[in-house]
Image 1 (spheres, rainbow, N blue to C red):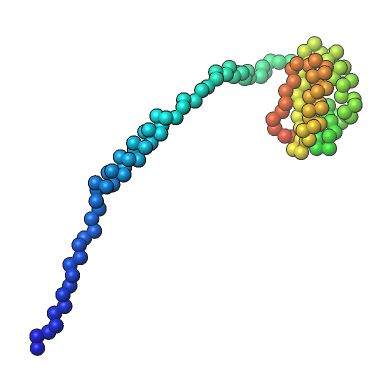
Image 2: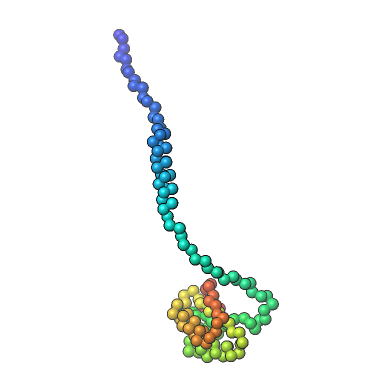
Length: 143
């Protein structure tokens, strides 16, 4: 008996065609180059930024600013002492009369309302006090 012969097909090995790959890469490169050339140049404006000066360690203690704190309920604290909003203009006027260079720092607790803070800023401006700052970190109520 002559046995049945099984013919095996020889498979071709997979081949990566490099020419179409190069064509695609050059097309993408040309697209990005043309795109970047067509972008408008960004117009900029020169801005003179303020420079911070470190505090003077030899500064007298009487020259420290008054701290007005606004709490979540809208109540105010003048150097940790609770005051009413109606008393604020009189306090500011007295402070301005006693100091030739009045300075005020406005602070707020974690949940202070924006409206109450703006009302305090308006009172400071009405008193013509030019040196005031707003504390950017929160502190506990009355602290």
